[in-house]
Image (tube, rainbow over all chains, first blue to last red; front, side, top):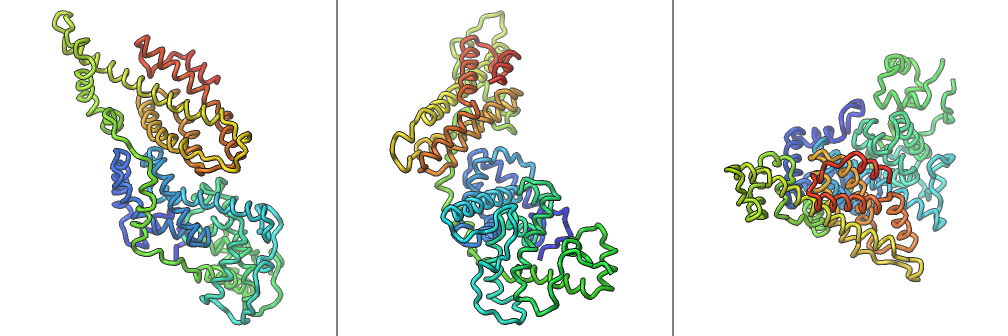
Length: 229
Length: 268
């Protein structure tokens, strides 16, 4: 699991450490591949695609929730990265850069999907800034047992449904923060907001997911309202 | 005892340095807050229970096969070596001499100004290079203008069609994006920020077209037309083309424009 206390470390550095690769040598190799691509060697871009496809796919899958959309996001991200390669100018790590492009495209897709769903009068999902609703009001209850379900397929399915109720920004924020260990600054860049707003977005996402888990928690006293003494 | 808020517990769990020691001390004493923190942890444990299906070891290779046919072609042009920034300083002199021999021949080689042949050839080679650039950029702007004009003048609502196929314009826009990037970089390297800025704006509009779906509704088509109009890009392109034509016929340096021309363009 990514070390969430390492806020100053970019997502890519965390992933590279986890995969055992030397981040610096990869960055140098990536820079060379970028240069060769710009010089007209298409096969050089293949190196970049194959090297960075897996974790971009994981981001895309966690954001979209399904394989088909995830693959589309990844393809589009690498196509856009290719078209904008000259603008990349080697100032950042290529992996971080294409990750950011994928996150931006995925968030646009999520917003588009929500917009299409609301036009078709699908069961509404929580829109940006609207009052919260309990995600479980939209979840079919399959009669879960009252015991803790951590690690079970049923819990995973419930969490998937709960994630679908998050706004695109909230989903992006929790995916980047929890799974990819991205710093708040990185999240703010993708969300096109400031760090304070990005932090709040992550927190709102956690709050909503926690509501979704409430029926599955061990019986305790009545939930304490925030800030009570 | 004042309990921690949900947000404070989250911030603590998230690694916030602010108030950390005080929170740690409080958690030692407060079972209720420890319980709340544990419930918060359950959310993250539940997230960890969600796995991502493995796309397979060959995913990268499959992805490449899917996108490779869609990558815009990078046509190797005989002058491209001049514009690769990293190699410009080294290759420029040699390539310019080759160009001088190719283009000038009779016009330069027979200069009879008292034995200054090689000096004149080198200076003229630079002019040749500049002229090549003027012609190439002018040609590119002409093609871009045609695509934008065709899109701007179309009347999608009157066609009565539900979907409009713009794949041909898309393909042309994709190719133009490639060329545009090359010229924009060259303009930046040459210090012509005004030209680079116009080419940057043109590139954004071309990419908008290139990245649109191949078939669009009349409403989406009108949205593309609006974006072209809002940028004022057609007018800017025409102004630059005129300047380049003037530079070509007047044999002026193309990448250094006087301030009045720059102001004109910026006003647009």
